Image 1 (cartoon, rainbow, N blue to C red):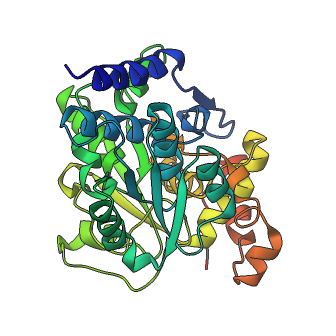
Image 2: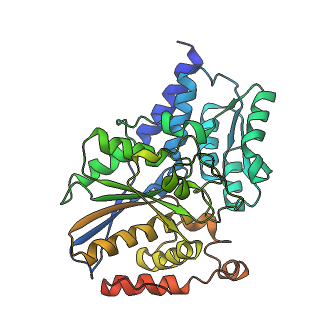
Length: 354
């Protein structure tokens, strides 16, 4: 084998061995004795998000396919977290990295990409795919294209993917098999991995995907129309898409819930009190959908276990989702959702909003 390739694979595997698995946090629900809620905390990865797993898989995929060689410039279209994680692995291998990001990406994420010596090029959100492909061709580099390859780069049968990790950690809980796993979709790679693993292991778990406002994934799930596009941009960075991405697999999802932006941001405020920490926007989307499912289970008085995830920390969004002035400037009234969640947490009763 090529000595550089052998060294690159060794470095990535060494990085895996240095990293312990992420925590699975049990959230106490005092008013709901029959329901258990667990959160897979992906913010504890070295690069701070769920996308660390994806970036590692995409690099291994590119290396083993002969697309990434010594000196190859790595290019990605990303709204932030994937680019942060890919910049980390590019630096690890001594490769240049360019992130093509949509205008409006948080400065905190841009700073994180730069920290790992990545270069950022901001373009209109509709042009990130074509511009990334153009740059890669111009520089004879490799376009990672997470939106196409996320679902196939990850080994969904195991190899320490997020699904295998969840079930391994849940094996010491009672019951060991969750009734629901709730995640959100950006590329669709995470939902594809979890959905396939559930079927591969013949688990009785159902998969719910939470989708933010402005995304077409929910409408695609309901209609099956792959040509759907949206002229709205998602306020929740990292999830939801204006088009149906090739990596999003509708057939392995049992349910989707569309979450309003105000519900997402209200959930973040509620979680700050509940967990004593700030979480990123996609976590708010995940958890609002998870609480809806829990409310339905509680109403039917069904004992159940629900697993969701903390995708990244809130430190990257101090100027946006966790900034009261930003919420006011964008006309987001989150208090009704905060009140709804606090009432549910305290009483076990889910009040419907007008």
